[in-house]
Image (cartoon, rainbow, N blue to C red):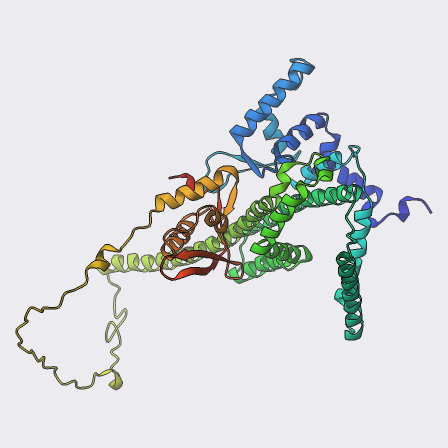
Length: 496
């Protein structure tokens, strides 16, 4: 038996040969200018975690990158213009960039494809790491297996026994700490776990791009089916919704939905922010010179997830436009038939046919239903009382007229804009923490109105709410529960 026969069906010679010729990641690794492509895409998209860049800005960055390379390699190195390189990298022959026009954008934008990101990630993994930890990954394997065993166990006795073991271990740990024996993690284990956290966090960003690509592929297939469809509307919609449900209800779709619900939890976000800030202050972590952008990785997850949500929204909008267009075409066909009948009637009016052409007793049937007749209603006689209005002597309190106040929207927008100067996203709770409410509930409602008018602001459903508090001069401490609101840097607050 040869070694080839022991491989899985997708790893035989023919499948690998086809993959070598067609897969963009493999083509990137085999390209003559692979160092140029990988170094530029890594520095532009992967390292700063940038999702999309406009064409003019990306071309300018590539110009600078080529200029520095030509200074070292000679003026004849990479002779093509930057824009020509970008256009070729985005065509179907390479497939390393995605060139598209966003909503309300006249300039093309570029985004990294999942295949190119896989190739770049593989090359990054070739670098020799200063510290290779295995203990954390082995522990993670044990924990995952334990979660699967516990999650699938149906025997109440076994699950209770396992929980009692955990409680005994926790009680034993508490007794040791109370006795002064505190087990502190050493530097090697800290470095091992931090590297695992950093790698997993960046892998999640790559997963977002792949999920977004799957929904984009579905959107493209829907557009192609709508363009070439000749059958009934019900059959097309059944196929489209079936394909969408197949992705949404798949293991990948359910995992993404659970991840998004977990990420949208305010308590989880606050816990991540607090724990990341604590871990980055550890001396062992600082010795690794970590990337400071990892401190805000959960906000990068939110931004990447929002891109995927907008892709799904575009798919729904495409289906809605299709239904509207079909209804308009059907109405147009009916009106065309009616107009054709009218034109024939006008022609026949001057030259009527011989004999009796058509007889109508009435242009429309007369329908008279007894129950539609209104009942007798006696006329209403208005009574007018003639009284002389006399001037009262009571003094009215006019102080309330001067206690009204006005909430300044410009000041609230300035608060949000100031909070966004050092970050790309900020929640309403963070804004209120930096700028406490001065006018109570009226000012809080104004913040909600600003978020509803801002198309870039993210307002979660009632399941992801947050509690804000303030002090009323009369009633004392007050609290309100409002939806989770996140302002972004591209929103309306920067148009003021």
